Amino acid sequence: MARRRLESRGGLLADIQTAILTEPLDSLFHITEELGRGKFAVVKKCVEKATGKEFAAKFVRKRRRGRDCRADVIHELAVLEAACCNSRVINLHAAYENEHDIILLLEYAAGGEIFDHCVSDELLSESQIVRLIRQILEGVHLLHQSNIVHLDLKPQNILLTSLSPVGDIKIVDFGLARRLGTVGELREIVGTPEYVAPEILNYEPITTASDLWSVGVITYMLITGESPFAGEDKQQTFLNVSQVNVDYSREAFTRVSELAVHFIRKLLVKTPEDRPSAADCLSHPWLWQQYPGAELSPPAVPRVPRERSGGAKWASAPEDPED
Ligand code: ADP
Ligand code: MG
Image (cartoon, rainbow, N blue to C red; front, side, top):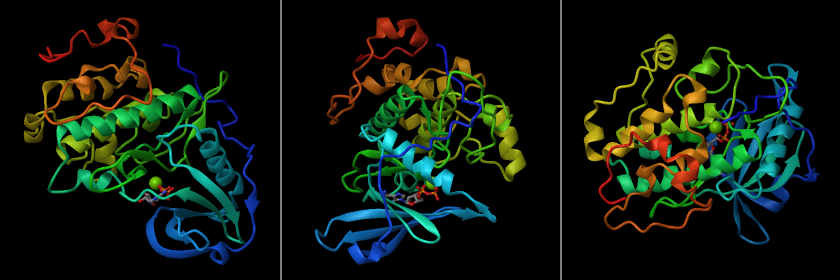
């Protein structure tokens, strides 16, 4: 499959439709607890005074290390706009600006990060994991169809609409996302080494396939509760990623079907061109097994018939008795 590479301009978007409001956020919203934070942003819950509706306000710093980074924040806003029809992406409600920050007023995802389900004593069942991975792939597929790569997919950036019962996923944090172009390419060291693909660490061209690697890492973590490439230090992690050092013999894999391991093995491959696309993945038999007590909800993206997606793609999949 031909994959588009990033434009030489760096794939940054500058055009936005959303009006950036300048009235103080706290005149319209009660700003309550902190929901999370990263290097340049803090996210706080807020409640609209007029309606009682809950939102998440992401305060993104405009100046970073003494540099004006307003254009980067506008880019993040523009990507959210471009993905506004994608139900697996967090919805942008409005944008504000003060002296220091641009504030992205986002739909509130009440269920927190799927990361919490990767480090919990009680891991999710296989059928729940399959449901979440399907939703992540639907979201990623739609992003890739719009030529957007996320480049920072990790369990901290996949949120849930509710905690109990486990809700639907929402992809957040488009600070590192890029628009793919037809000419030029982008090589950047971005993302968190534990979760990013070898081509990114090796400063090789970035394509949509880089996101699929991260989907493999997320799947591994939901099943085992362990990060597949995390080493003692950054250097060890880099080495583990570039050598694709993955332990498939963990005890936790005995609790899931062989198809789950087959799925991860297809994604965690060094050569980006050899990884399946998000659409390919959506036809993997692991995602369409019947699980006892699990209802199969219709996909947001139509299932690609096996013949067309190349039944051969999954020809080496272990036999699935119920498929
Ligand atoms: P950063 O770019 O700093 O990583 P994120 O957009 O990833 O910022 O937000 C940081 C954290 O804040 C997330 O990992 C999550 O825990 C929380 N968060 C972000 N957006 C929302 C939201 N819409 N609803 C609930 N929590 C959120
Ligand atoms: Mg983040």
